[in-house]
Image (cartoon, rainbow, N blue to C red; front, top):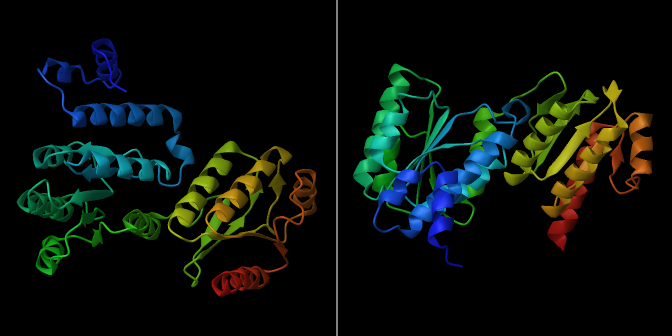
Length: 305
C-alpha cells in the first residue's frame, strides 16, 4: 500500500519527525524509522515501568539497520524495556552524556567496523570512569575470530552472533545479569536444569504483582526456560479475580512446549481453578521435588517422541 502526501505528513507528525518532511525525497528507511518511533511512544504511554520485570533498565541500541532495530525493539518490549535508539556512532556517543545505561547493544558494522570498535571503546571508557555496572553487548553476522576477539579486548562483555537464535541469546543474557531475585510478592529461584524456572509466590491480589510476574515469566520462557513451577504454600492473599494469571501462564508455557506446575496451592486457589475449568489441566504437586519430577518426565517423553 502506497501512502499519499497527507498520510506521510501525518505519519511523521505523529512520530515528531517533521524535519524529515524537508527532505526532497524520503527513503524506505525513513518510513520504518517513523513507525518504530510511533510504536515506542505508544509503548511508553501504555507500560508502567514499575510493573515490568526489566522496565527500569536503560538500554541503548546502536544499529543502522532498520530491520534489526525493529526486531530488537519488539523483543525488548516483551520484557518491558523501551530502548533508546542510536543509528550512528556520533548519536551513540552523545547518548552517553544524557542517560545512565544498564546495557548497550552495538552492531559491529555501522556500516564500517571502525565505527563499531570506537563505540565499544568509548563505552568501555565510560564504564571505567562513570558507570562500572554498564554491560556491553556486541551483535554481528561476522564469524571472523580476529574481529570478535578484538571486541572482547576493547571491553565487550558478550558477543552474540546473528544466527537463528540470536534473540534468545540476548534474552538469556538479560535474564542472567538483570533478573530481580525477589520482591515482597514473589521470589525467583534459579534451577540447575536449563529449561526450568521456579518461583515462591506469597500473594495474588494486586495488578502490579500480576503484571510483574507475567513479565518475568515471559522473559524466562523467551529465553527457553519454558517450564514454570509456582510454589504457593506461602500464599496468604488471593483474589479470585486474578485466576486468569494461571490461564495466561499455562498458555505461555504450553505454546512454547513447556509445562506449568503448582506446588501446594491453598484451597481457595484450587476452588478458583475448578471454577475456571482448569482443574486437572494444570498439574499440582505436593513438593518442589514432585514438580521437578513431573516436568522432567514430560521433557523425557517429548524427546522420545
